[in-house]
Structures are given as C-alpha cells and as structure tokens.
Image (cartoon, rainbow, N blue to C red; front, side, top):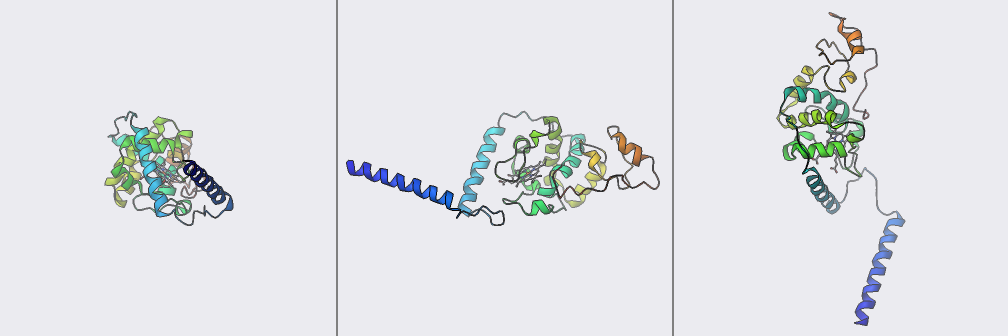
Length: 220
Ligand code: HEC
C-alpha cells in the first residue's frame, strides 16, 4: 500500500513538473500562422459546439421569416461580418485571411446551426478565437436582423446575394456605412446626412463625402 501511494505521489509531482516546464519553456507555438494540432482542434471543436448548444437552448427566437428583417440585416452583415467570414461571391478581407482558426463561411454554418445558436454566437463571441462578442456593443434588436440574413445565406449564390444587397440600400443600422455609389433608392429610415448629400443629386449623383471605407480591413 505504501509503495502505491509513494508511486502516485511521484507520478503526480512529475506530471505537475512536466506541465510547468511545458508552460514556462515557451516550446508551445502560439502563432496564428500554424494551425492547432488535429487532436487539439477536435477537442476544442467538440467543446465549442457542446457549449453553444447548451447556452442557446433557452433563447426565444422571434419570427425571422420576413423580407424586411433580412434586408435590414444585410448591410449590417457587410459592415460587421464579411471582413472575416466573407459572403457569397466575396472572399474575407486581409484580417480574415490571417485568422487561425479560420472564420467559416456562414452559409455553411447556417445550414447546420439553428437560429438560436447563430444568435448566441453572434452576441457572445467565442473565446481565444477572432470571433467578437457583438453583444458588447449591440442590443439584441440590432443582432436579430443579422441572424435573419444568416438563415437566408444557404440559399444565396453570389448573384442572389448581390441582388439582395442592392435592394437593401439604406436599411439596417449600418446603412450609413454604405458608399452611396449612384444610390437613389432610400427608405424612410435612411439617415439625413445621406439624404442631404446623395438623394438630391440625380441624374448624376455627387460623390460620397466620406472616403470609401474598406470594411474588410477592420471591424466597425
Ligand atoms: C474579427 C473576425 C470576425 C468577425 C468580424 C466576425 N467573426 Fe464570426 N467567427 C470568427 C472566427 C475566427 C470564428 C471561428 C471560431 C472557431 O471556429 O473556433 C467565427 C465563428 C462564427 C460563428 C460560428 C460558426 C460555426 O460554424 O461554428 C458564427 C455563427 C459567427 N462567427 C457569426 C458572425 C457574425 C454574424 C458576425 C458579424 C456580426 C461575425 N461572426 C463577425 C471571426 C469573426
């Protein structure tokens, strides 16, 4: 009995020492230019999916099946998500291309995640990845339109996506981030600044007063 206890103590001491050595020696490569090992990736992925599933269970999903909500979501999606995730017909921007783990194509995610899960991730983000918690800066009512758009993504090819985006001019809380680019289709909720600078200028619209931002290069 004594020898068993002594062996157990020695083994745990060695394991502790090994772990400390591993942590403090710097041998683990934290760079984003190499992916996780296959084993670690599998463990992290399982942990993430189980965590999301459990936490999304009690979320009340509003009716997302509305054109208006989807249209309101697409400009916000462009401003907040496309730089990392890309969109149908669009590659992610420079920051998105350097992410590890990479930001998945959300059309594929939406095909296997339910709206409550999509909402939970959008609002809360994912630790130790590039996925931000948008709930830190946005209310639920600003995030549901993005989720409505996500649920539509699996059915959208590049052409349908571009057409939807065209129809959505002036909608969503990031509408003002959109370059006016000949835009004349605005809705009532368009902001006054744009109305004053771009709407009156047919047939030749004035150039947008602000330089075109590239939202691919940074989150808003
Ligand atoms: C700065 C980069 C970045 C931005 C911006 C970003 N994401 Fe992500 N997102 C990620 C990364 C990286 C992951 C993958 C995390 C992982 O696999 O561990 C991710 C994962 C997700 C997932 C889970 C997908 C899956 O298949 O598991 C959803 C849903 C998601 N993001 C939605 C959004 C939405 C919606 C927006 C915009 C409102 C957004 N993201 C903006 C980087 C980003």
